[in-house]
Image (cartoon, rainbow, N blue to C red):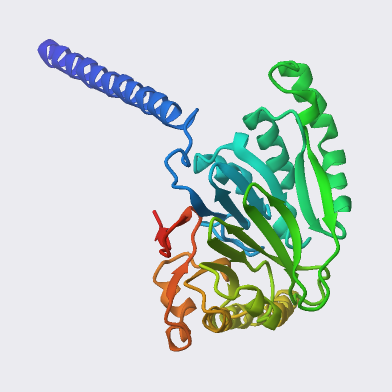
Length: 359
């Protein structure tokens, strides 16, 4: 009996020792992984090897609807080593960092319109660019009339936070003058007119008014640099003005709503007797383009590649992308990609190719 007790005690000690060793080993592995992650992230610049020309990164491809795989809309356009941001949806500032994009290189922000899902990440963007990029001047925020009201509101909301950070880290680490944004408004172009809203060092950004009723103003942007061009639609129905604006572009980044999938949501909300949500899902058809309509714009504008973003509804399974694209190949024979967060498009200078990468 005593021998049995000794054996049981020894076995228990051995089990505990193994558990302890495994726990310690697990901690060591975790610490090693954490150190490796920090080393691979801090100071790294995913654009370091980008060729001259244009690089487009879909940082966020979502919409106001919940989507576990997508944050709010943000499109980054890189010209050489200069970084420009179009819109800033919720979570896009953090996703920007996850993609190892350089806050230090962010030169300006452009807003297509002032729907909440296109601006609700501005506060985070302002803070990350300031602290992460060590900027001593606010970021210029270009947009149609109303942009000053939006920027001033975020500046006021984050004023206390800005003071805290300078007080905590000191002005050498957090330059006091770099907090927030500064609005750079422009008048919405009338009808189908095109307006130059930014120009310098061979890069030209133009804007055109698009149709997103009842939201006014709403614009699309085109970036031209070293013979390459990208158009970003913002939110819009199919627009003749946008089609003319995108003529001959290398890449069209276009929003889209798949009506057949949204109708399933409407039916579900109706069955659940959530009448206000059923009505909302009916209403959103009226101010977004369908994937086929976006493809018609790309075809009529003779665009090389069509890249979808601001995806409605959520596509939690990649096999749903085929349903989203139903009918697109019947109207457009160029390259087509359903954007995901972290989609990259490369438009190197001197050639006509568009290379799209998704991870």
